[in-house]
Amino acid sequence: SSDLQGMKHAAAEKRQRQAEALLAWQRQQATNGVPRSQFDLGLRYLNADGVETNPQLGAYWVKQAAAQDYTPAIDFLKTNRAGGSPHQ
Image (cartoon, rainbow, N blue to C red; front, side, top):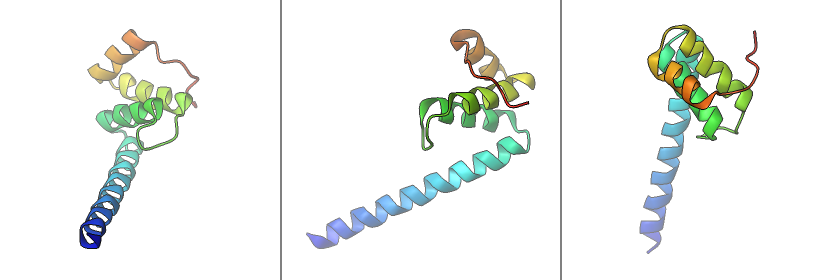
């Protein structure tokens, strides 16, 4: 039915807005130096999760988190040897 299609469309739009809001929040937190957000944002860029793939930017954010002794980022770098040249 068209009502069901309309509800599905509204739900999809709501999920999209929520995803965009989460991404904006993660970017803000990462910029403010929150290691978990830096790591999560880095992984998004490395895996094209809601953003275009950007290995350099992904590596930059993962390395920022690792520089603050964020263990998951340190372990990720040891395991994956995330390349890219961070913007200094």
